[in-house]
Every structure is written in C-alpha cells, then in structure tokens.
Image 1 (cartoon, rainbow, N blue to C red):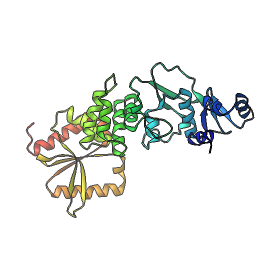
Image 2: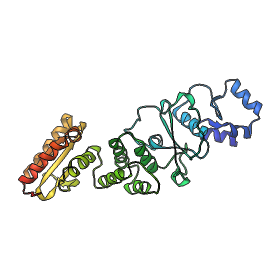
Image 3: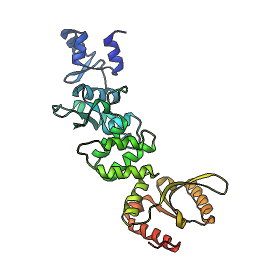
Image 4: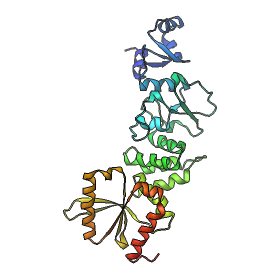
Length: 310
C-alpha cells in the first residue's frame, strides 16, 4: 500500500488538498473532483468518494480544514471516547462540532452546513492531545473539563464531570490536574468542589445537587456517601447518604426508582435497615433540585429526633 492509499485509509477517505498534491498533479486532482469521483466539501479538503459523508468523515473534514494544530475537543472528543448521556443521540454530521484551536487562528466558514464551535486556547499543547487516537482530539480529562467549562449551566457542568468518572473514562485526579493548570478558567472553583463530592462517592448528579443545595446551603452535618452495608441475607447494599452517628439514611431517587421491580427492591432493602435501627428517608431527585429547603427541614427533624443538637 503506497503512502497516499494509507493516508486515505487512516483518515476515512478525507485528506487535505496539500497532502493530495504531494502525490498527484494539480490537473489530476481537478479531474478527480470534476469527474465526481472525489468531492471537495470545503476549501483545502477533499473526500475520496462521492455521496454522503459519514460522521467520522465530517469530523475529519472539520479538523483538516482548521489545520494540523487544531484538535476536536469538548463533548465531540468526549463522545468519541465513549462518553454517553450528552448529545450522543444526535449524529456528529448534524452538529454541533466542538474544536480547540491555537490563538490567532483565522476563522473558517463552517463546511457542510454544520455548526462548528471553535474555542481558541492558549493552554492547548501536545500534552493535551491524545498521541494515538484519531481523528486528532484532546485527551479525555481535558475534553471533559472543557465541556464542563463551556456548558451553559452549572448543573450541566457538574453532570459532565460526574458522568466521566462514573462511566470509568477518567479519574478524579486527572480532572483535578487539568483544572489546576494556570490561566483563566470559568467555574474552576465550582468544578474543583464538585470533584471532591464525586471522589467522596456522589457520582450521580442528584447526589451532587443534594450536597450543594441541601448539605452546604442549610449547614447540615457532613454525611458519608455511597455507604456499603450487608443486609439480612448478606447481600451488599449501597446507600446514597448516611448520617452514621444518628443512624439516619437518605436515598435520592432518579427515574429508575419509579419502575415497579426497582421500587420493590428498594422497599425490601429499606425494611432491612429499619429493622436494624435506621431511619430511612427517600426524596425524588427533582425535589432535591426544586425544593431543597423542604428536604433539609425533613432531614434536620430526623437528626434532632435521633439526638443531633446542631
């Protein structure tokens, strides 16, 4: 396989015009495009086929249009590295496509009718880019931090970091290293605080909401999170939040807990803990977000009933 064929294969059939002209004459290239065998989706890039482009070909087109120092970033890069739950039902070819480029990069018209969101960053170095994965993109920790920084809401930003750790894509320490790099960064304090919560076990966004909106805002005692306990049949059980000195447990229920089988399993588990002397309080995740005062008041009443004097 010659070098041109290898490049075409490695880059999903998308190459820059400059690379094509390394192996072809200008007239040969113009003939391939004019005959319809190849196509030029934007200035400086050719696709070595006719017909619609795949998702990966669209990403290669955007990347090559912006030159060798650019990299796919944010949610685009994170989705390529298997992050789920954020825009992953929308094909890449429908956008938006997130890109990180060096400062001073000249604007390019978005190809193929795409929405291309370009962030120019002075903090983009070769250490931020994965050395092997293609198309060229930032490493997963950098991708997640960028996506969190660019997210419209604080809650959405925290969700991205929580999901990245929960899905086993990165470690808290790797995210913390990216967040502590010098230079201006939106939400740095909030995201570092959230990493502490994630590291402590609050991997679901509902638990992050609980920590921010209930524990801190209403000055409740700091609980343990994701506590493991054996039930009466010696099965390992996990509790979202436990105020151990007062034997008060709190469960934050997402939509999955509304399914009948899950509800019955939750009831069975709660009964075991009640028999063991615990008070078990349950709140839907939406109540934690929308009415944290009610949640805090209920927990405080249970704690005081159990002897808490705060």
